[in-house]
Image 1 (spheres, rainbow, N blue to C red):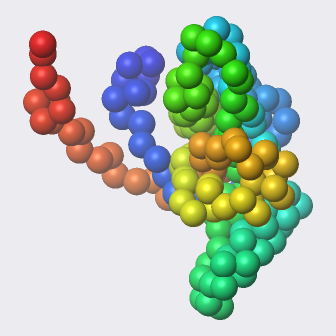
Image 2 (image 1 turned 60 degrees about the horizontal axis):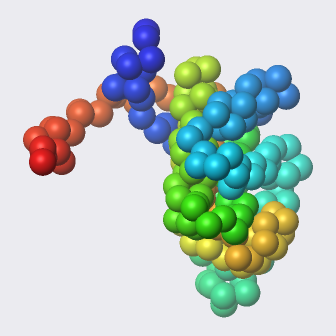
Length: 182
């Protein structure tokens, strides 16, 4: 399959299991994230690799975040299980820089491109991958526990693992509904 065919047929898969990939594979995935468009070469993103015991630490952070918000037991329980949906999570966050020509918004988009590249790299290697956000992406306690400064953004949690089931290919969207020429 060539790159264009891959991009035309790729889709997220939340059904993940198995062990985290080894360090060489993780580094290969992260290298893809480092090759995204980056105005002025600021590299306004960071990766936090979460696996093994890190999943338990992230679970505790999620649980603490919901508890601090006075969430009910069901919501606390659900949040505490979220990190175990995959054997590897790559948290993509921003690292904003002051720059006269590169506004914060462009830097956020570049970090989003890095998350996308990480997901595409994992998928191209045969793994299932799912880019997730949600309220834990914005919670200050989660940022603090992950070592992310409060003024930075968590762009997403990219869950990666072996696919526990294959999904049928979704229909492509009709271009006519989303494109106009000027």
